[in-house]
Image (cartoon, rainbow, N blue to C red):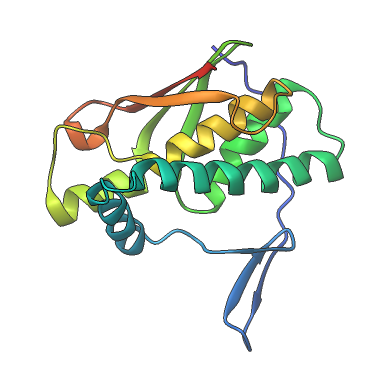
Length: 178
């Protein structure tokens, strides 16, 4: 279990009314909309010919790794607990839900969401299903696993082991060093 400290994520949220763009700490950011996210998640899931799920997961991992790494560097964040706390707050700020890193080791990192905006949207639009749908969340977990262990991007293979859309009490993730 990861011990949490009260580490505040410094938030500079601005909106450019001319270009209709949101900025989070200087980075142009699309704040989460479950209507849009469930649609492109479904499209990625249907795209079996070019493995859309993995492409969506990789795009999320690349993006979150870059944004969080820049934030950690600019603010001198080095402690694992601080990195985890900031990552959890960032996930919530962009509207993806509530994620909690339940174990952070060098070889394995685990996380759970008892609330996921994407799962909630999926359930309202299409109902439950037998396979989890948090490809973006899996990418985020992979990015955080690499950053907390000072590993390069893509160092962890992430699997969603439980899913709220599957009727589980949480969506759970396991990242294993590859």
